[in-house]
Length: 267
Image 1 (tube, rainbow, N blue to C red):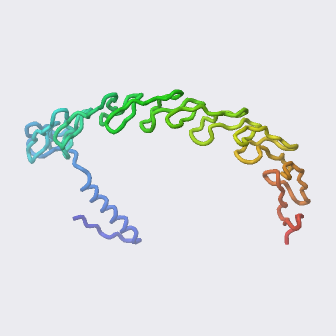
Image 2: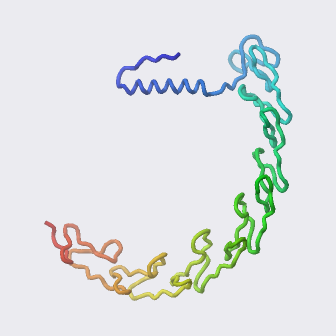
Image 3: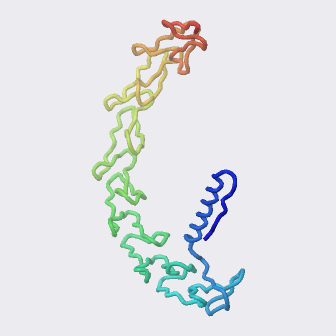
């Protein structure tokens, strides 16, 4: 058992030392031994270590006392050289069964083995349903996608999916397609605003400019003007005041306070 002398100084130093010892113990018990080596005379199916003393078993053998015994490696498997576990793994395209054999991974029709070699994927134009690959019923005005889930297709631009079909999107005059995956399928051109499914022209009052926000009238007053009764009225900036950042309001200068619509020196 490891004993540590309590260090002098601040109490936290002892806590840090104790935690470090605990980590070392956990690592020493948790990390598997990778080497398959021993000491003494080199047995059959072994060779001296490339560095240091001792010997190591050949690939496909495992140390047992002072000997290197052959692993029971099933067909379609290869030795890993590790001293823990079975010591072997299945080849690409095979999977372990009951920890004793390597059976072929069942790949259904219209599918292929993934590059990892551990799973399969349906061919293009097919989608997975449990352990089979079924043909994708591609509607008119649609194209195949690379998604492994869902319908496996998307509608062409200008069409929207509805009950397994691709229906044309009705875009009003002065509107355009947004190509958005969600939300509105169309929007109004600059200078127009959506009203009851239409794109009506924006009536721009004097001293205003277009501002195509998703809300509001679609325009904004110029700097020095404020919105009143649907129009842009010049702002009467009182003495000792200035227009704020937006340009459509005013604020008292520093050192002055608002009182009855005027900016007066603070007390």
